[in-house]
Length: 176
Image (cartoon, rainbow, N blue to C red):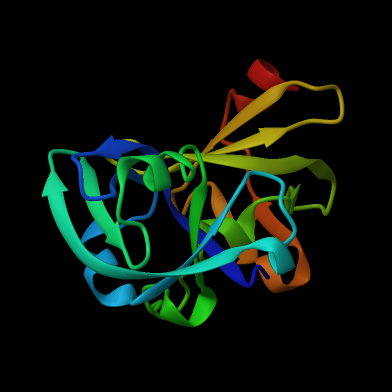
């Protein structure tokens, strides 16, 4: 289980007061207003190297957000944060309902069929209009797409490191 969730990426500098334009990567970008402090990191940086910043204000800008961090007061200071990722601790994340799981916790889970045969590793979740789709990478390197519907996804146990799926008719022949 992950301890921190990536909620955004700093995409560009905005204006002359040190504001940053941020691409939100989480489900509910409006929650930025309530985060208070966030952690900012370069990709691949260890957690002990992350820097904490306090968000002073948030403005919407289409699909992007404009954030003002305390202590970042010029475009030059904001430019130093470009392409960095914004994280929050798990306890600040959207609370889950019963039977729900964070996508980050599902990444890397083994995908098993009804007979406990490993189909592959869950490596991505595609958001579609009607239902999510799990992207599973097989041992042979093939991509197996599994619709997240009750007929296909039988069980999710990220705390135990697996997702159980039933291959719908035609999927085995198509992908395996």
